[in-house]
Length: 319
Ligand SMILES: C[S@@+](CC[C@H](N)C(=O)[O-])C[C@H]1O[C@@H](n2cnc3c(N)ncnc32)[C@H](O)[C@@H]1O
Image: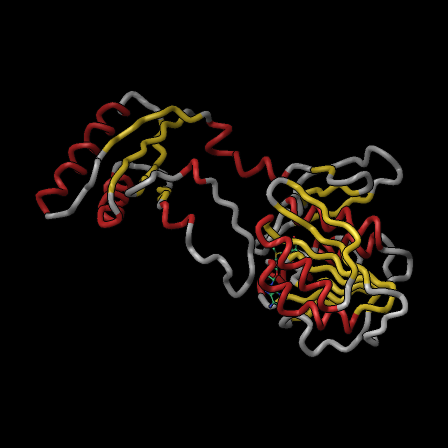
């Protein structure tokens, strides 16, 4: 089936009635592109990462977009939508510019675009992430496979911040290490650590949806005996030490528990952090240094940063 995208440049006030008109015209799915999304405070309680492209948003007003199947009635359907939207003025609704644009959408893009993130992805020299519903034959004998079904939890394992954390774990985790994964999400970093032969991993997340998803993915990858998943706020209430702590959380959240991470990481151990945008890099580096870590490596992928910090072997600040 071919699809057409109808995009209506309008006002906030008109979103609701225009969405109704589009639904009644048989649209499948309505998308609102509101430029206020770009400046909204995004540090929500779960610290999920959002990446929005300003190119997708108008300077003023909002875009209401919907998808209509291309059939012989499309022209009439579009005319009907245009008339119904213009008639909203009679109900005292400000419809703004009311600029209507139609463009053809390639079916791949519309119906299956999301799937491209769910193909097997080789994310490092060792690791390939494979969605649970894909059949995948390892290409080489030393390849490590993480099977993942993120469900509602962050993420598919292919976000730049996750990739940088996995690559850092690959360089850091030694056989027998203990690891703490703060903000485990889908459990992907804990699974990676288990496959790298860590002896025990403590996976923590504030969000119970993430805790459930992590448990399922950990079972699926047959590493449950090595990983304890629990609901928890950062490192509060944690007392067991680890050679490696990894946290892919927002910069502001890392600042909150850098001191706790320093206490729980063994001398000579490593704190891997990501979820940091370029603008917050220095802030996190300064905080890690103030907590007693030395910055070992700063890695960048797209607009994101990961910082790998070490606790000195002979820490003067005590352990
Ligand atoms: C960006 S996701 C990272 C998920 C996964 N570790 C990865 O690398 O793909 C951040 C995760 O941190 C969790 N989180 C946010 N604030 C937290 C807190 N205060 N304590 C524990 N987990 C938290 C969120 O629920 C979310 O699952």
